[in-house]
Length: 204
Image (tube, rainbow, N blue to C red; front, side):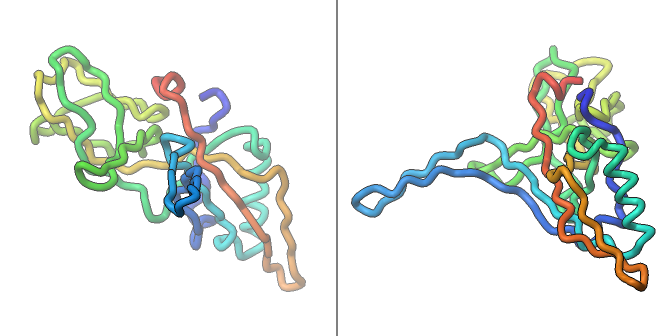
């Protein structure tokens, strides 16, 4: 991603963040009262508001610096979801040929699961096992791809445990910060929107 800066939104400014996944579904109510529902997109998109973490003039200045360095909404950055930042699950099955696999997180249990690609693993947190045996891999921290030096055997279960950030951007083209007489800062919104990366981009 050329429009992405590999830096994380300051954790101490994110305390009290609210938000989570959003999904858009078209709902058509028929004449008999029944419904037909269709998902407009395959993947959910995380939406956050980090306003609660901003308390002082110093923090307001830090936010201002971070916002300006991202050129507002132009460049994306890493954000640690305060609730959902860890994964520990199967990411693939070996076929004896493929050496590259995508880190993912699985939600739910069969037969009703959602598999989410995680493209921004946290450096130093990724461990990979093949049939339960820890195995060395190389990790691309901007795409979430891992690579084995030799292909796992056909039918081998590949699992990964790691922490991850969410690629986001500012969702507003302005900051509206108020300082009171005692140096405390107030701001109404710091909206952040997840950047959904295409497969072609995430291959990195």
